[in-house]
Length: 384
Image 1 (cartoon, one colour):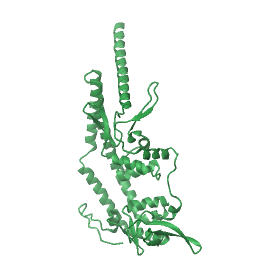
Image 2: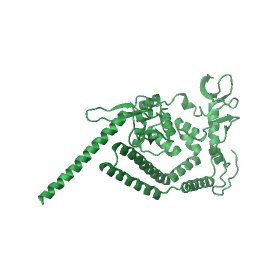
Image 3: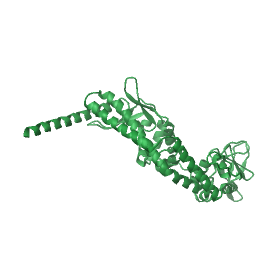
Image 4: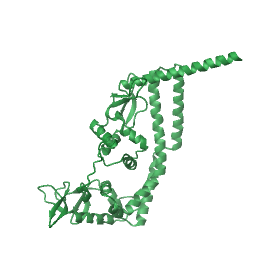
């Protein structure tokens, strides 16, 4: 009947009109909240969503806030390309993020206590002071922006640092202060030295120090059968830790489905005026955060299962050829390699090296790290 079609069109049009009004009302409410300095929606990485006593949503630092500080601090040194730092954090910290998301993180003013308010109708985009706690100081943030957008080149020291790869990694054997390095003229030429500061007179020829270091890392390399055994032990331990965590992809997928249903139900309650808009927003923020966290956890669990063997194989391949890898690398890579294996610094004395404290990497390569209890393997004792 024509009359039935008219009524159907009328009901459909009213529903669409209601949805548009609802969308405008929610958009204006969220924009006003941002103008008041509040971050709405899912909290950025490094923060978590919270609700105050009045039911208003806000964000506060999460337990991973220190990782945000590390990201900005390391990138501000100018020593990393964004993707290089992202991959480094993925290996060292288990931090997973896409290239675009990582770059967006580095440019997000929320980390200095600001809120970006997007343009709306005739109002331009602008940034206001937020009510949340900043995780990064403004100077560091601005330095990161300068590096990202080409106003300031990375601060690589390419002059004397090219001649002294161990500078910053050696302690004086006499006073345990950090050794520096410089060139001295003599006998018609220039000679490099690692040396201490006045009044300490500790001083070594850089060429001898560098050659002895290459011999030192060469002695750390273990036979292939031992390296293969260490690799299997590490892979078994990673599997055991994953099982002990009690988290499975099936459980996470089930929880994700349940949270998505809760979000759909919440939308229906708002449309039917069962809950007010401000309460709806607070509840939606909480559910959205839960959904995002569970999806990230599911993605991370899947990535660990895929990437762990790849990175373990890559790491042990590097350790098995450590001397060649070091010899053929540019100075910037040599410095990173030294810092990652010997973070507690090295002491050079009588043409030999020792670490300033316990070093599990060296202990493992020397066969002195206690691995009994993981697989029943009794390591062979040997010394460099």
